[in-house]
Length: 107
Image 1: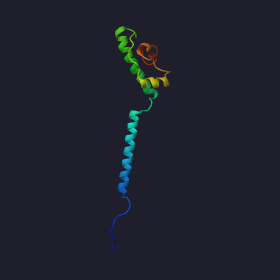
Image 2: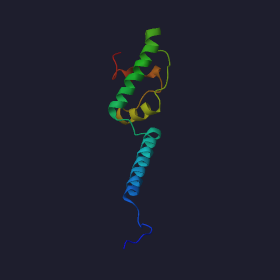
Image 3: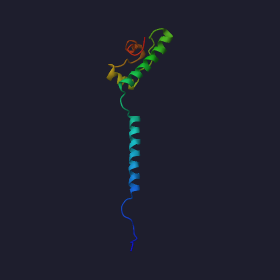
Image 4: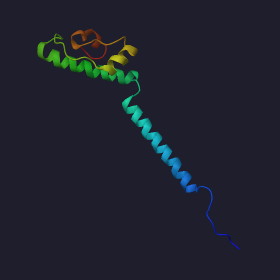
């Protein structure tokens, strides 16, 4: 005689779905953390940002005046932070950047 009644315990399918849900939530939390907090730039990324910023300074200033006399923009927090770590700091604007940028682009 087979007893009919409620099955006890949790089905394996439920456990697997719970694990998949936890994994997906973990990945989403990690991606949001990386997007908003972000990791510090490594040296190659920092050098790339420096090249981009210095090129912008050179093009906006030297193309008009023939030298770097215009003030231009600040390098930005990410470049300023990583340049302090890898390159001894960054200038505060394009006017002071010509010597510093010589290490990254042809002047």
